[in-house]
Amino acid sequence: MNIFKLVEIFNSKVSEALDKTYMSFPKHEHKSLSSRLRKDQPIYTTRVSAERNKYKVGMIVNSPIGKLKIKSIKQLDNIKEHPFYDELSEEDRNTISRKKMDLIKLVKVKKDE
Image 1 (cartoon, rainbow, N blue to C red):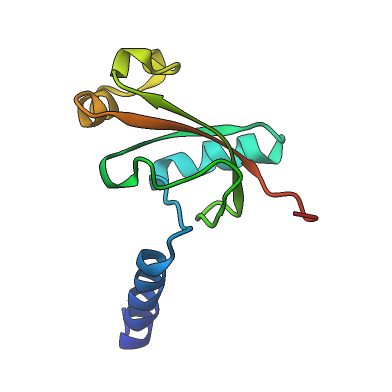
Image 2: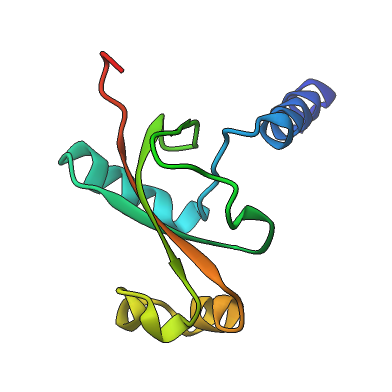
């Protein structure tokens, strides 16, 4: 990898960190999330710790899968309340199990928004 590529990657990561309206997703989820968005289906994400209470309903966020609009946020105090509990991997359950969380529903931003 040459120095120019490294600088480009570094600048991209710095921009993401500074952008308060940027929402990241695990790379292994990009394909399935993008597929749902192409079908005009909502996607859901769980945010904990520093990202809890960061987002507001109606906010438009940038992401690696495009611009998304937050439609709803439900605060959960227990992992067992998660509507997709059975679909969460054991690793995801362990990561968020002892934390309060926000379950966020997002949709693809329409061109006129």
